[in-house]
Image 1: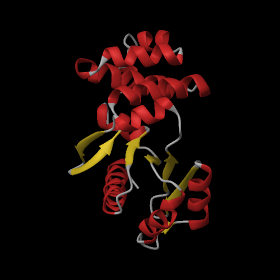
Image 2: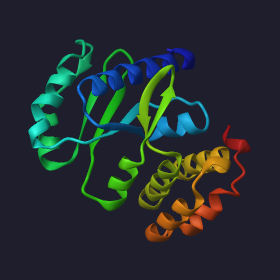
Image 3: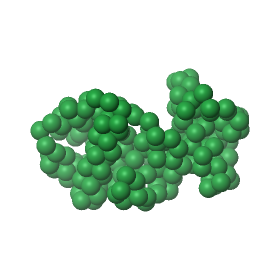
Image 4: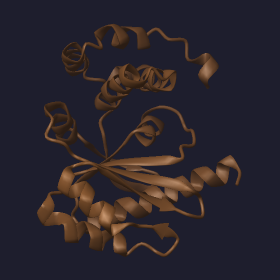
Length: 198
């Protein structure tokens, strides 16, 4: 499969899953690599990440929503239930493309809750859907970089920061960066030369 068809499949999957979440009234936001792609530069990712809000009372609703997917998706209902009960995460695999759909349960964490409440309703790939904000995409990527030391997360944050710079709420960014001890990194990503990474 070439990169063009991979990208098309990725977009089709995103549209399909967000339609299901919206139809089932499951609060969600697209996050991770897809939010980086939306706010900065196109690239392919083997994962599509979502944050969803669901409690024990929503287990059957969530299972029913994903039961509507065709047979080329691997859906494990027991893992969905376990993830919701324990506020963890679960995934669904699309066999034809081997793209993994990761669903992270919204945790009772102040930053996670604030970022979820700040999610933006946008038109992406020809469809209305909810995305994490550019500011929260940056902040989360900096946290991932601290946890993993994987440079890709820092570069992703830099792309979003530099491309969206004129639209960012800098006060919000620096307020949370201070709380996360990532202020130095936030200043660094404004200066990274991204030319080699295009």
